[in-house]
Length: 371
Image 1 (cartoon, rainbow, N blue to C red):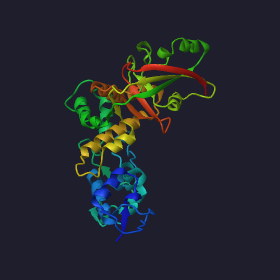
Image 2 (cartoon, rainbow, N blue to C red):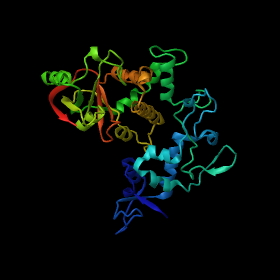
Image 3 (cartoon, rainbow, N blue to C red):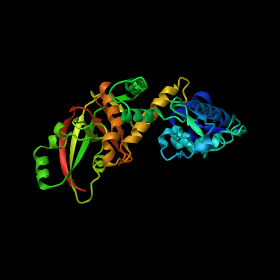
Image 4 (spheres, rainbow, N blue to C red):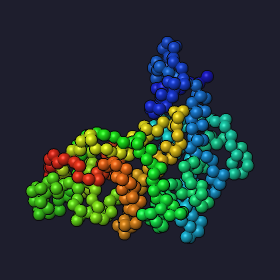
């Protein structure tokens, strides 16, 4: 009988599952297949395989037309490609759900004995092919044309091209957003941070302005200068900060010739923030727990697609329209009573950004450096 131990995995939820449903190792000098020396817990391969497959089957299903649209190519000239729901391979699903443990889990489930009907009417091992894109997420809305949009894509299409300020019979902005209240509750945090904001110094006059009033010049933009941004429409000013000095510098995409002014500020733990960093969201939803709710997983996917959108480069001519969905989402978070939210930096892989809605931060210091 083949076993895996608690040291074979990195995911804390998988380790907790092994401790709860596996068995304590009593053999002396036990060495696991992964090379771990004297681990505490082990579990039968078939036990964890069955559970992984059961979990995946709750979140995804085999699409009967998978082999026809796996590449998501539009067939007609005017066929909008985003009307096709994305199909996932088993490797992509495991990567999303289990991250560092993907290869180990693929090895466990690749010889599954579970069967399912596929489009050609034959039985195949549906967990035996890690590369073919034939899985459709259960989070997709099946009532939206032939192949459905994700909830985030559907939201974007409606607020950009149909209605964005009021609810209509075919689409409700408020109902869509209100689905995420419960999920956001899991992500709230109260913590004091030192935060940073950087600005390029384009000329001597600007440098003098910053030196004379760094608290104002390096804080969030005054309303009269508030331009259209990913989270804030023209005329509304939010504060765009970073938790690390290096992240603040990278976010302004400067070159080696620019001088840079970096303001250091502080927020206290009384601020109510959302932590939308991917690592935090993953830790809040335990798909291995018996009380796991698929709706929480789907809400997480919606927010992840929102975060993916904010990291995409957008052509200047498209900003007015393409920023609308992310601006609505940000204002909704403010409407719920949050003071801001944390999110991963797209410019610094280890960095974190912070959006603050109001002037609830304290100036500490500044410095001017040459990149």
